[in-house]
Image (cartoon, rainbow, N blue to C red; front, side, top):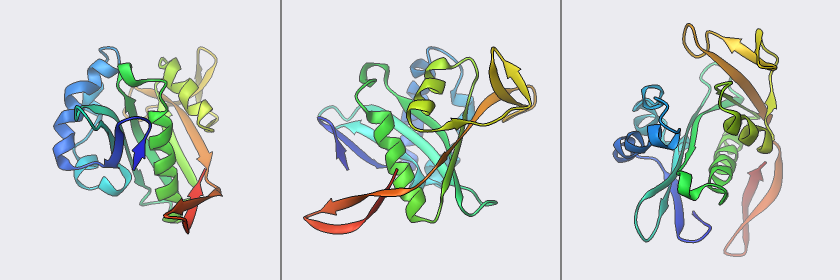
Length: 182
């Protein structure tokens, strides 16, 4: 899938894991994020994890990792969405999320969950702009509802949900191929 100028989106592979690890902390402004990004996504969840690459340079422009819930059959979860700081505001994060929404919807999911740190205001704004709603929390942090001990003991996250509804027809070679979830 090609989006924007010279950017191709494809499913993540094991080869991409070290590429993502090499940039993820820098992309988060020096925060230690690599410890939360498991190789499992690049090995066992490649159908729901994606990378966006610059076609001319081959450089990583963005990535998304996610999965279908094994407990709740109609739910999916986005674990990470990262965009290179020099490629932000180009719609790459949005395009990756919409691709995930489409794959999730095509596989029977009707709800997508995600979470982010309450200190990451940029991520919170992104989730809200993507149509996610903040879930009620067990406590508050600077006016935001948070889940405690999530994902690990002593940590907290703002939890989000987004309903998936098929709204767009996807045209490929002039033929209707399916519905795009939004």
